Image 1 (tube, one colour):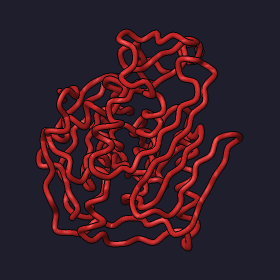
Image 2 (cartoon, one colour):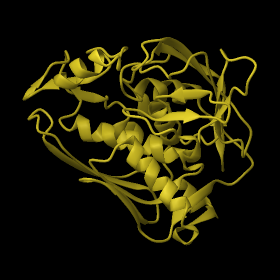
Image 3 (cartoon, helix red, strand yellow):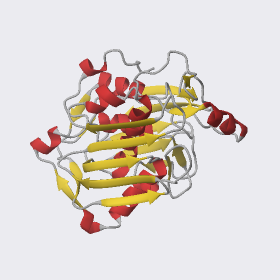
Image 4 (cartoon, helix red, strand yellow):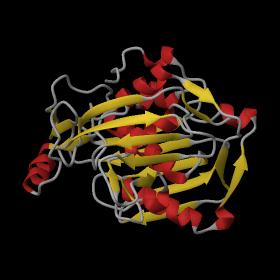
Length: 309
């Protein structure tokens, strides 16, 4: 069955790229509603922004959604990953600024807030997107691909010159709360040289050593070090889940990413939906629903995660 959150939960903080404070409130919604953002600071034009693949405006470093009136919400990927990873299919997200707060750089605060509120079942089956044939896109050495599989799997590889990151690979079957336990607390990361260049270009204005893992060669600059030895590839998988959640339904298939980022995953979805023979929308029975990300997770899975505001 489709689900929504039982009651509203709010999060406040600065945006990673704008440095602006914003408050986000996730509200319950009815079956078949999907995920929508509403800009509460906007008057006179359409303030509703769909969380959907065809509303993505491909920009560097984050996922940005834009509606037909030009109203946008950026850096939605961590919140979208949390919703998918907690098994929430329908929600209205109110936000009073242009960017979702970065919080600690991971999805863990969002997950903790959502699971503390709990979910409510709705009287409608889950509509999922079953991959029927391979779809693959490239950008130089980067690759993103979808293959048929019974449920969502993510297979990711990254390769960075910095020894603190290096080559990392990880594969996960996303059923049984794998996102909450394995991925959700992995933080966004960057190199010290990138931080300097971004600040000089007016980017990452809200970035700090507390909301991103910063590395310099073989050294982790951020205090406290890493949460996982392979935190970087885990975060890339987190981002991938958030970007795939814009497909308007859970994906039943295997996602492979090699050096892939937000824009390439969105290009993959655009390519998929341009090929009707490559997918089919299906109604999930109980067995298929049980394999979706977020099914079966509970408050017990969030021990030690940061709490919502």
